[in-house]
Amino acid sequence: MTSRSSKVTARPSSEARAVARTQTLIKGAGGIGTVRKTTLPGGLRVVTETLPSVRSATFGIWAHVGSRDETPALNGATHYLEHLLFKGTERRSALDISAALDAVGGEMNAFTAKEYTCYYARVLDTDLPLAIDVVCDMLTGSLILEEDVDVERGAILEEIAMTEDDPGDCVHDLFAHTMFGDNALGRPVLGTVDTVNALSADRIRRFYKKHYDPTHLVVACAGNIDHNKVVRQVRAAFEKAGAFKNTAAQPIGPREGRRTIRTSGKVELLARKTEQAHVVLGMPGLARTDDRRWAMGVLNTALGGGMSSRLFQEVREKRGLAYSVYSYTSGFADCGLFGVYAGCRPSQVHDVLKICRDELDHVAANGLTDDEIARAVGQLRGSTVLGLEDTGALMNRIGKSELCWGEQMSVDDMLDRIAAVTPDEVRSVARDILGQRPSLSVIGPLKDKQAARLHDAVA
Image (cartoon, rainbow, N blue to C red; front, side, top):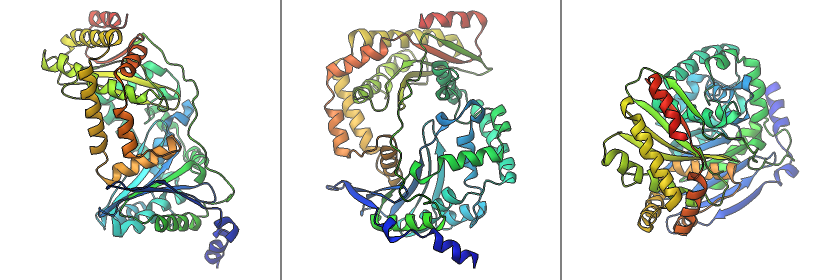
């Protein structure tokens, strides 16, 4: 009796149903999928890319929340919640959730970043309704029980310990702290041992209710799918959970910038008994909405994006000073980072840093050659397409684009934008970014005299 009553109250009126709006954002042609978007009453967005030539489908739900949305006391709550949504709902236990996807050979996982979280499942196209039902159930019906919080705390503490045992990974967290300090962007996504131990089930539940409203969510699905069927199945799942409490609600827009303060010329060293010294040398980069990001992508590729890049050639090929050396960019709503990573013997760290700093300074002052830029453009265009050869990558692209930019760009448009980058644009962004005073983060068994000399690398 109670069950039947709850189903009736959860069903929206015909007036509310008429509010749903569907748009075709990208018209498929030449093997490129059609991208469509429906906004449901209640503010939930459903974006799909249809590719009839494949036999798989990837279904994901993106939440507009990341570690950046945490207070210092809540550091790690977003990632903690990611774990807990797999622990059970009113309809399924944790075993039921995993067994449902295992039984059809599906893959299921999630990840937490600084500005968003994503839960996804990849299955055969015929098993897509199951994936939709399971993932939507997790997102709308998580119980977050006290006993599950206590059990998962141990798993998360082990994950933190595992990260700390990998200095090549840990040094990037250290570099974020070097650049942003105790700002939310400078704190680790996983949290710390102290903050994770302090988080209670009640605080995590409040965090869940605040950030997992339909207006904060984007559903993304790619593969051999039918857009209208996906929308109907998603809608039914959210209605069953009573998630559409305000059918007049509108989706929130892309995250706005906060003018995050970044530092320059700072050095942070973490003494560890490791075989290598792990180094990140970098400076403030570009926000992900900056129009110069295309030129920055070309610059990054030419500097440290492949075996023919300057840093790889100078550090590894010519001198054999490191096995792994590369550059990277990270773009956020209002700011970004550019960094160069290298892992080398502690006795070689000063030589590696000098070479990297000399190359950055040279490119800032003189730019890249036309040949380097042309090669980087070709490499970036090719890697962009090759990176979208499976339904999981396509789901990531359309989901992140809707959440972070509020729009979709076709693959052809992306390739055209990369190809349109000029040498002058690359040289201009090189002056602006590489001309800044860098900061430095190092993890390794450094002696006192070595540590003192490292400050010279950013002088």
